[in-house]
Image (cartoon, rainbow, N blue to C red; front, top):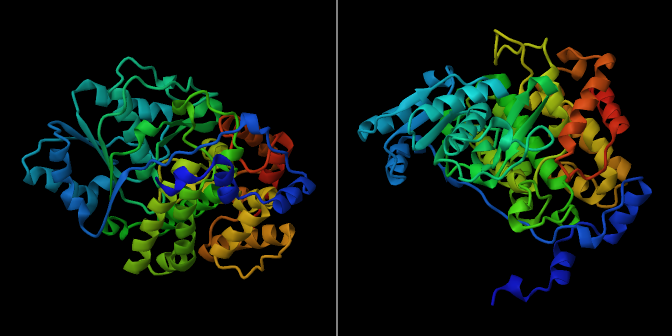
Length: 466
């Protein structure tokens, strides 16, 4: 009999519940919401992830994997920039050497919208593709997930599987077709998660598909594929890693999340912090502490870029099962509504706020807001990032130190100093807040309850960050 079988539910919760009575009392004093009754909260969590293969040069093995899947008609999904890189070349050569014919779809849009994803879905439905190879960053991998899912559910409408409130949030009849992800950025984590993010312009906000059945079957993590990342791509990808890990670690615990699912398959992908996800994100935070700055200040530092890619997948395995909360939830309207900011290392043709930038710009204010809900977890996160805070530090001190750690990364890298430098001002705050609240209708793991006023306050504090 295993150790876990010997544990009663009560003793298991006692061991793994990150809320101690002292901390919870502090949270109540700080004005944070009380938890729901025990009868309405979940009692279990699941850990699922893609198979991960890590190593320099493993991209060249992908032909073997396509043969192993028994695939005869693979489709490579990429974008026009990645199609010129060594990563794409190695994927194509690996297939060609084994006599595997393939087609390429390279019309991927950075920060994909409903329209761009529908284009990929339509292409995938035209021919009997039986395996998908996503070669690129998060936008490519997220689009490939959607294409592989809808191709195997040919009668499904676009919003059938999109999460509520924008979509119906249905469970598909069939899982997606086999998908191998080859990330070319060190940040997305999408290669290990069951999440695909989509911009819905008419809602002025992003949303997503969250299903365990869209986790890639295999993630090919090759550090050689990120050595040529432009500076800003490396910076904002790294911020995505950092926030994935911080949000996962500070999310509401799985056994405080409500409502209790009606059946096991109704348990959400974003379950809340849990002991297994904690292992991955703690390691990711320690890697970020040691290697993030090195990977930016010396782009030839192969060790640093290798470890940041490792941290990306580790954080992906963590947040892919625990979830993200304020930083990401508040980023979706920023990305969707930002129509005047251009980044030289992304698109020169149309305005675009890179995902990692939209995520990190509210992070200091986010954690100033959430720390009172669980000072201990925020303290540990700050310590993992290198602070020397004592365990007796007050919630206010913890919040301010953690916020300063985030600000220091932004200032050291010369990032835009808040929303103002991305084209927003005070007149945009209410519109951002209204759109953001839609994101939280399907996200029950924020460590602290939010409303219009609290979200507006976070956006206003994020107009200038450092």
